[in-house]
Amino acid sequence: MKTNLDALLTALYVHLDDHVLPSADRPRRRGPQRVLNDAELVCVAVAQVLLGCDSERRWLRTAPGRVGHLFPRLPGQSEYNRHLRDAAPALFAAAMWLVRRVPSWQDRLRLMDGTPLRCGASRTTVNRSALGEIAGYGMDKSHHAFYWGAKLMLITTAEGAVCAFSLAHPKELDERKQAVHLLHVRPPAPGPCPIVCDKGSAGAGVEKAAADLGHVLIRPVRQDEPDPQVAVFPAWLRQRIEAVIWTLKNQLGLERHAARTTEGLWTRLCQRICALNAAIWHNWLTDAPVKRSLIAYDH
Image (cartoon, rainbow, N blue to C red; front, top):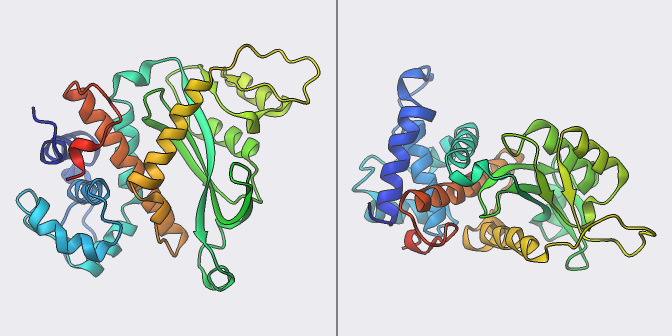
């Protein structure tokens, strides 16, 4: 099997249509018949992200020449935008199915980190945006700057496949509460496992909540701990999830999401994570040396 975008989209469509989003099980929607079914729409959305087309208008001008031989029926810009907003459940289901099909899903190690997801830079945007229910002012401690947006929490395998993720208002849920909530609603592994995190997850409450679920939090020692009981921290593992966040924000365009509604922001997040998990899954199928590499699919 070749390691390129066409091979990835072909394999992804076959598996989604057979096992995840079968056409026969979907009820008939009201209104005109859609040009793309759910499996086709997920594949086209994944191709858009992997090829670096942040703008949907630009993507639909590029798509016929790049993926038109695979999907000869492509919708117009308004139809694609509308159907993509309704495709968040399908994108989420595809992303979670893909991560469970990679061998590293059985590994007993997970990485967890939170990162700001900026949604606006001006007071006018804050006042007029429809993102108010998920976005707010927060502090980005890594860059010592305030931001207006949402807080993204990720749990990944050691190679970078995203096992669980959530968005939260930075004022309503701090990093510890969001981590505990995510561990409760979305089990990150088949069973209890150690989770490597940062100092933001320090605290008796969050560590006890994780222990009640069977997970052990591994984090750096805080300077204000009088008698730390933490072993030597594997800093090189922390760099892996930082690299995953960089891939999502920069290479897959999450930092340039341009979402104007809460539903649009969630869909764009699911779209990027589905694309990342699809690339890692296909790299396992083709025995690629670097599982998180996207070089074979970005052209």
